[in-house]
Amino acid sequence: MTDPTTAARRVAALTLIPTSVAVFGAGLAWANSHDPYASSSSKSGTSSQTPDDQLAAAQAKVDDAQAKLAKLQAEVDGRNADQANQSAAAGGASSAAQSAAGAATTAAGTKATAQAKAAAVAKATVAAPVVVAAPPAPKVQTVTKASTKP
Amino acid sequence: MTVSTDLAVTFTSMASDIEIRVVDPARGAQEAVDRAVAEIDAIATHLTRFDPESALSKANRAPDAWHEVPAVLADAISAAHSAHRVTQGLFDPRVGSTLAAWGYDKSFERIQTEAVGTTSWDIDIHRTLRGAPVARATWKPTITGTVIHLGGSPIDLGGIGKGLAVRHAAAALADAGRSVLVDAGGDEWLAGPGPDGDGWKVGVEDPLGRDEHVLVLAVTDLGVATSSIARQRWTVRGVPVHHLVDPRTQTPGGAGLAAVTVLHPDPAWAEVWSKTLYLTGAADIAASAAARDLAAAWVTVDGEIGLSAAIRPFVLWQVTR
Image (cartoon, rainbow over all chains, first blue to last red; front, side, top):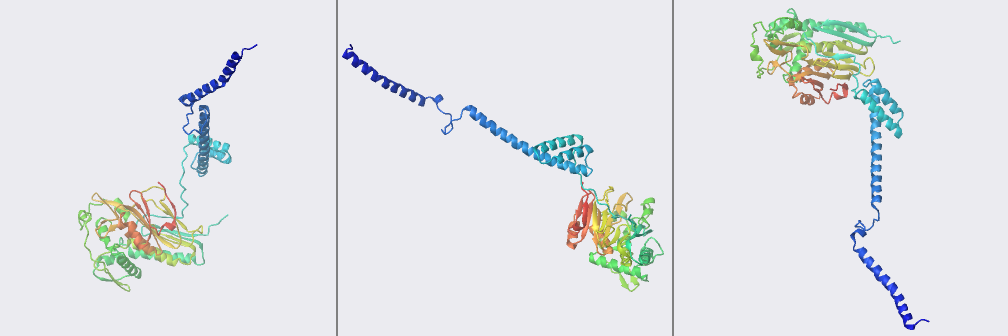
């Protein structure tokens, strides 16, 4: 048989267990709220990204910028290839420049074309500097000039 | 196959190679060409100062006397007087005496081969080359029909004479064909649409001696004249001179300019304006051309090309340097 006093002590002890847990939990919460290493680095309190997440986001921005640069470079290369082709057609560039620029012009319109143009311009530049030639003088039928007067 | 039907004549007169060309000649074109040649020959015969027996030479020997002269000379003196008045004296045929003093009293080819500067002249060359303004009365010749009085000074009608020769030839060729060219070397007349139908293409010579033209003009029904020091330069006792004398100073004019080209409906006036614009010099030519609304192009001694607003519509091409 159980002694009534002993039973009362057991009931009291069981009652104190949740209270102790609650007090301990509150202590932990207070400690967390005052531990700088346990808080977010974001002052705004709106971001919950880890350093890895931030690095990934930055890398994505870099990739995006590089893609834009590549697109612009392809456009510039394409224009240069067209100019080289025109100069070659006017007789002002070497045959190498003409064929290279002409090949690049044929493939206009796609990213691959832009790359081909860039490569063609690079080859033409190496073969002979691209010079935009002035239009030749029209054929004349007479010349006004200094003369020996009587 | 295209068969050229042009009628072309070349000959030498007024110390220049003359060319007459008729594109798609009409009936009677050959007779018109013959008349044009005769007009040019008449000018060359009576207006030269290098033939002592020419009508001009005889008048120049007695400039204070009255002379009965051929009509072509009387007309030329009248035209020169008009130019003298309109240009306010900048065109002055009396500079011939200065040219003669510098040894240019013979054809230019002989100046280059003879020892210039060893002759004793009446005029002190070094004094005249200083460039100080020379006070001179307005030239006032008198022309009554074919009787003339030079007003006391011998004259040189070389430049305007060539312009007048082209004017007379152009009149003779008015109905000769679809297009006509008269080229007297420095003075031209270009009528009609030209051989290609879109204007005569006129190259403007580089006065600095480079092979490439400085301009190409497209011209229809206009006279073209160029005054340039590209050729007629020589030295007098070591002093460089040229044939474009400034009457204000009796010295070589046109400071900073190598050549001036003018387009004008009258080839004689094209000659007058090309010469007088040249004499204004590089600093003032743009303003002078604009004030007269002249179609003019010029090249400086540094090779810079200038264009008046009035000539820009005629410029088909300009050299790039």
